[in-house]
Length: 208
Image 1 (cartoon, rainbow, N blue to C red):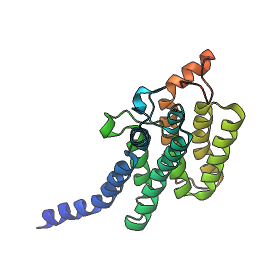
Image 2 (image 1 turned 135 degrees about the vertical axis):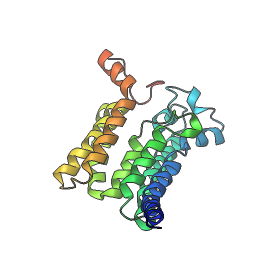
Image 3 (image 1 turned 30 degrees about the vertical axis):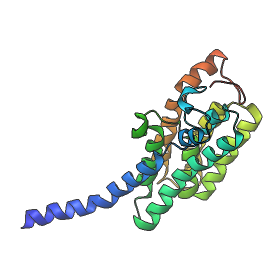
């Protein structure tokens, strides 16, 4: 009876973290870019431009409204995962955040070929600590406006998150944000190669 009770107790302890992780993953794995472009008759986003499912590639369809909607919905996935976990599964917000990010970057529905996570990470950061979200947005939008190179702006914004968390004393968030920033950079490895070659396109071009 004691062993059975211990097993049951262990199972109960693990249920909220697992639920948070799965909640985040399911939300994050919704491929809004693919769904919106298909619904609008703009074709299969995975066959357009870079083949990425994020807002930058949606912009290459010429549909600015679809690109903006994709950006906001991808951001909302991360934000909603954290907010819902905070309300229903307290103390498991970071697991929900990680699940949403991984879901966006590696969605099972698209054979694990997802986006690069920049917008979803911004939603996560905004929900975890609004001040960090402001820093993230300032770096991302500032560099995007100045350079018009989406990859540079996205990677810099992601890298700013763990740094800003440490500066603001949110050391509890640093490991998660550092891990997610490294994944963002890894997902941009082809962009990094083009940046080194000097062939990385700017916003408005056909590839990147």
